[in-house]
Image (tube, rainbow, N blue to C red; front, side, top):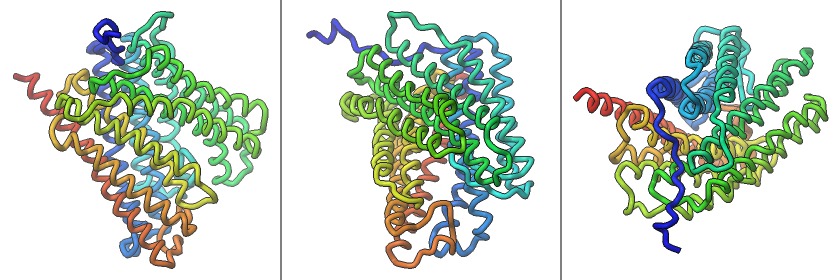
Length: 461
């Protein structure tokens, strides 16, 4: 069949108006600032676990405080900020005051959480998904940030574009972004339900672990949906034909969303503190998360064109896309072989989370011209995703290596009990890879700031 008679669907959204551009830019800057802050804490975090260097730090408390700040800034704040950018582009220009209020609340919450390690004296609580400091400043910041996130999700759902029966690639992307907002709403419901149901008599570590378990699992569906949207959007932006019709792409997004609705069932069927509740949510995430990822990743790999055929501004996009797919796949494979509570667990989620982060970094590169900035080009933009992904691959390889020796997670310094050369070598590789990954993450901020400056110069001519 003649390809010219059947042009490939273009997975892209139309250029937003000036009001939505301004709001989307503000969310992007919140995400960038969160990465800068996360990188600063990550430097200290990696050094506190690296052999020889670890002895230079007051490890016992410092490591856990840095870990709390690093995780919350690099995962929770970064993903929600980029979600805010994408939902602002996807929504209408109505109720802009609510959009700016949501952003202001989130920014205030981030500021309080980032300052808490320096002005507070709370004990770090290493709860899964949302670790925190048991300090009034940090908890106040987390609550204010949560209020801003709730307002963002409610506005995104209220202003979500209505999709008809006949739609194109843009419609499929809108459905994916709408689905991400739905899963975020389920997560907020789960957090509220847990808050109402968790026994307050539990000790702090158990209380917050149960409090964040259900909503944290639901949020993983949100991040996965955003990653899948970024994958096909970037594939199309690279000039490749996505071998999925808009209807099939919509089906993939639906498959990625459907298992999130196990969450309310888990709350209705079992008590929040029960093993059955915990296990059901875990299996829903494992099964539901993989239903769409494998076919979507294969479609992306089949579609990608050789680098020699790409425009200069598409080369960073391709690098980010390939790095994302590879790293996410490695994280998924590691997850299959997890047993016990050792550093294979952070190896798994570092691969998966950073895989999703790379996809959103690539999408930021692509959207910068639509936000009034220049397109990132040049060697630094092309190599940034590769440096970031390579560092993370080294990081998680070192963790898997050390996990094979039984090195425990969420510990540092003497608590790691590194006895043999194999364990020391594995954690040394982890440290080196972590530093390279930090450099790659900060290079992303540099590339974006350069694109912003070039765009302003071009606009001023």
